[in-house]
Image (tube, rainbow, N blue to C red):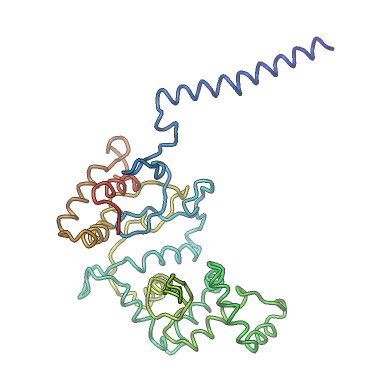
Length: 338
């Protein structure tokens, strides 16, 4: 018995030493010797020498001076890599893409060729009535209950805003409970549709959106207020505007600009996507530095071309650029954005 037990223990010890010690140590040594950059996370440093991110993991860039990556269903969280998993037939996918298109798309032909669609979306939205029906906000909430409910839960300020409205309109809440006996104690999300219908009636041509102002102490304070223009209106109501203006000729947008990758962490964008963003990036840098926009654009175009990659040396696939690498080149060339 002891003979077999000793052999078993010897085998366990041998396996632990090999599999938990020598093998990992060997892999670490090979990695540090043959490919140390990749073995240490493909980390990139900024002009000041500080690590700013990984070459193989996307991160968000919000300033107009920088190129922006593909949208991420994982919110660029490397520990939660995932796709959106939305089917083509799911309206949530159409809504998400439409929200990204609203603020950026332009007319492709006609008297407004090259001009953004966003101002026309705002003007259309501000109408007190829409084809003789209730205001656009009420229609949107009624047609897309889930989107109205998602708006309530998207930000604690939204939920608090609806909660405050609930206390001010007990009669409407009571009628909702009467019409929905299965929900005797409705939460803010349950009341989303009736809230938006009442809001549209009281604030025609407006939408509750975050507005930042300086408070009494001079510090910025963000509150929800009825607004008639802005990115929320441009994005949320682009799809309804598009359906009401089916004849409008809209410029095509690169697919990877509005669709998430399978991992949600793709660090690259297509060259076509980068070229689409080039005017915005160049114009902002030129304004910040008070330089000639055409000269800045040409310089950034050169940076893009020097950083273009393609599968198999360009023999197959779409040419692309690494967003973090290109933005670091911009930072090195032009400095810190204002």
